[in-house]
Image (cartoon, rainbow, N blue to C red; front, side, top):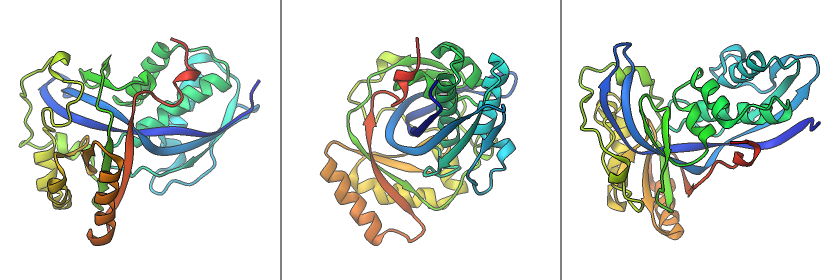
Length: 288
């Protein structure tokens, strides 16, 4: 049995659009979105333990070990499968919290995928997606492992062809609590539903992000970053914020824009470029 697996990617996602189409009786919002995987994210390292203990071996500022989605995901898989094994899990955290990039959800998905492989628990992709939904609405997408048109609370997924391009992503120095955006009385909750066929493969500017209007009012740095990106094309916020992005057909175009952000943008901004990817880098570890 393999004992360790290092440098396991937990890629970020972008919401190419995000519409709020309604609200369920339990208060959860009904969404439509296209999730786009990008080649930028956290890295996780796993080592099997024989004593059954689940330990996070690196500190994550502001996230206690027992409430970390990584640890919770490992414990959930252990409980669901009856595995007697444990794991040491280290993380190189690159994605910001409260950034709208799905970092915590992606970390949890990578944990489920890798430990299912290392522990030989034999869970299918569908079974892991069902487990992941208990941890958060975005987790099933990362286990699904392909760019997707999503509905419901984000868990109803269909594979979709998305643009092959480069993205410039700006983190504008603020962290956005998702609950504060969805709780706003100013949030649009009645966008007209669209069909997957309405989303053209080459689309970069389809639809809008219904959460963006609320987030930019509550967190002005998001609006500043969007304004900064406007000369380069369609700029948009991902998820509930705070990160914003703009797409480029050519890598050198993204490089030039990134150079300008780093040179003259506010000192508290963080920016990077990333390429769109079609599949999760760990998809090969899963059986259908």
